[in-house]
Length: 334
Ligand code: UT7
Image (cartoon, rainbow, N blue to C red; front, side, top):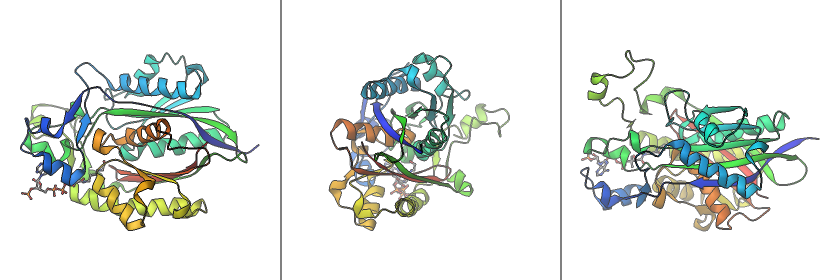
């Protein structure tokens, strides 16, 4: 029997602590108007001291399992996409593994930044279609707040990022049965890696971190914002159309578009370019900021809870991020 992967559970978790644009003005030279006008963001969630990425991931995973009415022991493998590992190694997935008491289920961290969820989805799908695992858990998890420069020097990057986690559980189903993942396409262009990165700590630096590295602010993220913006608004529509074409679908066939939540203006630009009606797009960046690899699974979990995902609906997901990486997926809900 030919197999296909179907999402049988979604979950999300964001910290309780709300950081508004007004809050940010205490620490840096910015204004509520600048942030809202340039990014669409009104507030984001940042962890409290002592909270860890795996705490957020655990809550998202438990919610996904509850929705699927399944247990941890039903999972065959865990793929966790993140750019903000709990520790430099082994990352985050192993601490999630410990937190959910996952026995000896294999797990890995996957690093494709804001496109990480789509990269993980493609790999999970391949594992399922090949018959390697019956169920694969895909998690996106980010804690950006502990790595941001909240002074004026970091204001361009810091205002856009939020913390959060989202998870989906994929299950093998009969490919002829109807619902499930139809197509995922991903790409990368490493020559632009330094346009959006955190240089240290890293093995290319010796020592990996010291006072000089910190003095040079290499431990804070750097972004060439305009360059990234231009590439995002080109690559996202491109890969979205490529994916639909590979699935023999048209833009008009899609019921719901979920875009990476990096900047509301990017998503508005894409919607305008592709003439996608507003009511077919869900955004949550206004409330949550940019949660990188967690953005798409959080949107999916919210859509599921808000009843925006009726069985049979066609959903398109598209992202762009550091690497550069970009990708798109299309699935039939159900
Ligand atoms: O998630 C991964 C992918 N990431 C993205 O897709 C993000 C893409 N880029 C962006 O979203 C935008 O480039 C930003 C929101 C990051 C920045 O917006 P921008 O319109 O590109 O601003 P800019 O960096 O070109 O800066 C314009 C001005 C500068 O001042 P001058 O030189 O014109 O006097 C900045 O210093 O705005 C200033 N500025 C700020 N002012 C107040 C930059 N950040 C801030 C701030 N508050 N937070």
